[in-house]
Image (cartoon, rainbow, N blue to C red; front, side, top):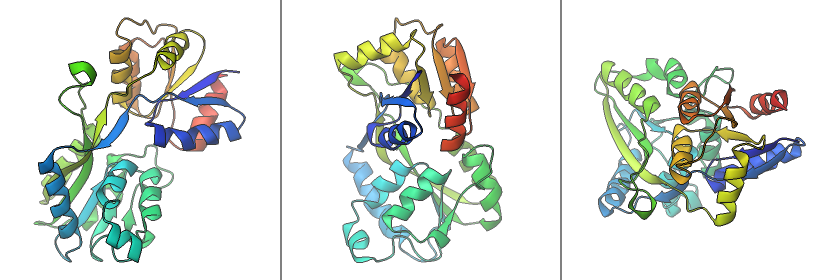
Length: 277
């Protein structure tokens, strides 16, 4: 049976691994991203300020969370609200998400489902472009929209340059918002970092370059981090499954010999994996 390597951050990877195993697939986590709160004191202060403004009626038309991690790091330190049931956002502020995973994170944090907007469930991709189709009518000239995101540090482990992150989706959305007359604010609440792999994880990755394992990539940065962790490795015998065309392009440029593409929903990913067996 072909092994599936889930490259999401460890806490995000576990639910996928469990779901795959429940479907009878051999799966394990091999994180290619590490997530941590922003260490910069200025970033922390900006978070505290934005959190208070998000509770002020009429300040933000919407707060867009680029991922479940963005939602977690924006709200989780706000213990008085999360523990007492008080509002997380002003009642007239919409919470925008790029897909069901981020929506699920917001619901688990206690946000009302009626306040959340995202792509249609049958959208070809869960991304900013699909979100915009559903929310563009909300925007009026002068509206403020806060985009809560992650950031990559200037350097990776051992002082190596960190892989660049294009942020194509959020940049595209910010451009559309500005064209519609909105003021856009960007707030980094967590950092995406190069993971510190053990010798065993490095061995697993080297073997998986040619043993038929299927690499599941949900971000271009994961592919870039793999190249940084194993800079001399050849991937011409490697098999990758990606959840966006941009990620597929990155995997191909990294040298993967076979790159498959799937919608990011669990059922579609499982179907794609099974078709590759």
